[in-house]
Image (cartoon, rainbow over all chains, first blue to last red; front, side, top):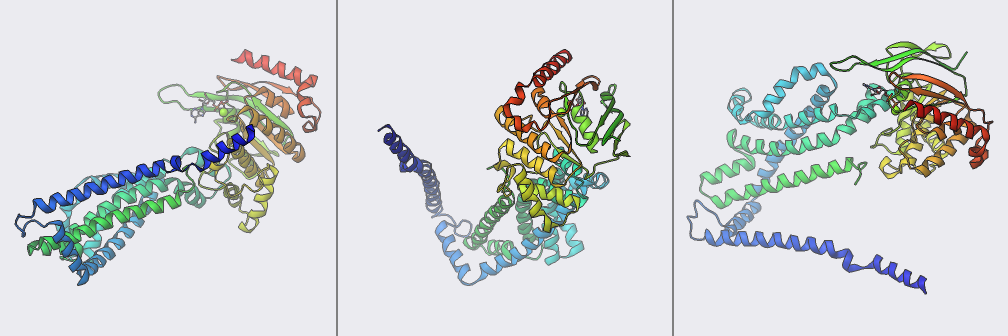
Length: 273
Length: 256
Ligand SMILES: Nc1ncnc2c1ncn2[C@@H]1O[C@H](COP(=O)(O)OP(=O)(O)O)[C@@H](O)[C@H]1O
Ligand SMILES: [Mg+2]
């Protein structure tokens, strides 16, 4: 008797749908709230700007139509590919340089002492100021854009990698020492995994700065890619069309951030959830 | 010739803006092959420091360590260390942690699997090789640490309070396993503990240390015949156990 009561209590609590879906329902309510606010915002924008000068202000419906047009004629896609290929190459090079230099600085005091002041100074300064001079040296083409992206993206990677490498817990280094691991083993199996979360957050910062660099480079050097579209359509007072590439940049930046997070999670499986 | 001999070992740590701190002062000890030595003493008396110097993780200020008569200058595969805490690399599975030590010793990867399985089975963790440390209990993590030290087949095992952070029950279970393990293998073992009970159960001789500066106060032989593992709980009722436990307890009380 007592036993069956117990069993039913267990099965009830295990299969109780109300309790289990509660956080889900909560999340759905919150999502709905966000979507509702967005719709409201767009509606207010649409109606408030209805009577404004079309040359200066675009309303959401016009932007949607313009985006559709640019998608159909392929302009948006080719600009996105143009921007992204440059960005990805620049970001990858910046990541590799950042990790290698950061590792060298973090493990070798001499290298750190020599490079540290420059890296901190360059990280802190508004690098945009360097762009005109840079254009004198590397022109306004592909090379200029890559250089600008690397310049913007590389320092957070270096700084975070150095921090991670230097912070390695002494207990873990002792394991390597006690079992006589080679220097390479210590780098690969102790220092690198320990520094990984630091590197990943450096990469996230670098991503944001790299995208800014890409757009700025497209504004200032050869007008091309998504930044070029923004400039050209703004200059032509086709404001609605200028919004389409802005939208794409926003989406890309967010998607890439999520991608970096996923990669980080994949490599951080060993951490306590 | 003793397996291990420690001669007049002194270790001073520099202290910023003050006189240096003497962690060990003139420590002398001979350990015979196959002997199990336990170190007890109040915290700060230099037990960890002594073990770390013997392992080569730390260098002595003066004095000498010899193994089989040859001076020790650094870490070696002839010694296997078990850490008190943070002894496993959290991003490697249990098997990979053991593989790390095997790779460091230069054992080809093809032979890692077999050795890893054997040592995991020895410490009662058959089938747990692909768990990450955070998926194992504290006691299981320490077993992995012991398995890793066993894997490199050292001549001397050094264990620094390996069960210190565990709950009483787990601790007692591991003590009994340790007893069986060491009596089967007959390795030379240096074992730091803060438990008098653990020391008397396991050791052939208990080294009592005193702090400030760290010195050997007394060396107490434990004449409970081996194998003790088969005695089970009866071990703790033998007159020798009761007497030695009392003697050590009194001595330690005088020190703190
Ligand atoms: N790296 C270090 N730097 C400075 N002092 C240390 C260091 N390691 C240990 N000590 C000091 O040496 C003494 C002995 O420490 P330890 O060997 O850890 O003692 P035990 O393991 O017996 O508790 C302590 O007073 C401790 O503070
Ligand atoms: Mg200690």
